[in-house]
Length: 158
Image 1: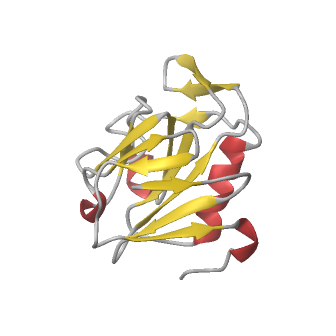
Image 2: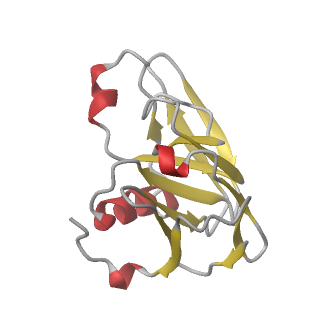
């Protein structure tokens, strides 16, 4: 399934209790990934996917702000160690890559590889890939609601 995206449009993918917000990068930039003891940077190309995953749901405005911090302001991403107590408190996480796979088996905020993002069980295994027009899904999922999302339609979902 292919979904076109342009400008600041996003794709909202909703399950019964979780969601992801998918946007695309408008430009080439270097994204820094900060870990406890190292920093590495990856190239983000125009059209690469920026995915905010909310495994337990939450406020859609928060997800959009996180997406914009990366897309517009090139905010570095922080990665915690697997035993860091703060990982339990992360309600949303971000990944940036040309292809991203959602996994419910990884702990939030502890995975520096950007091709994976933590998700709820209901979105486990969903794979997203950038296309010239926007984003494609690896499989059709009737249990997920997909809609086009524009930031001027942001409302509190809680």
